[in-house]
Image (cartoon, rainbow, N blue to C red):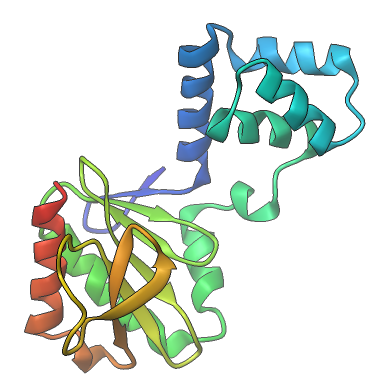
Amino acid sequence: MANTRDGSTMNDWSTMREMSARLLVERTGQDLAAWNQRIQAEGFKDEKELRTWLRAQGVTGYAQSLLVMEQFGYPDFMLSSAGELIDGQYADRPGLRPILEAILAAADGLGEVTVQARKTYVSLVSPRRTFARIQPTTKQRLDLALRLEGQKPGGRLLPSKIHETTPLQISLTSLDEVDAEVLGWLQRAYLENR
């Protein structure tokens, strides 16, 4: 976890790892070290075998994924910092980076917002849940996906395929497109989901 230059919180995958470890303890009463010992004692040959055994133990979801990665290795992107993840997203599309920066700056002014960097996108999370995702979809286009309940596509709001929880998106190709309308939709998504 890191702070951005404006003081908002920016999370990388380490935050998800911590959450998964916490869920593991809450759901099973045993911590990561205890589970790792149990798994090593069993001597699983592959991920499928381990997942089947974990399901039988009642370990599913994020906690299961954590234990599988602990045993068989973490993907490189999970070991990267938030800055490295974002740099990777925009390495071959630097013209889109100012659009991302403008959206992040606007999000910082909305209230309590956590920025979660992932391999291919950035999530904006209110204290309650994710309200927007920012994805450089092509080398010329960045998509801002929004969680707007009951809002139908129309005008600049298009159906989104980024994630089912953010069903609408606005496609942006230049910084000047991050205008009052876009910032208004971003604010509405935040207010509806805080």
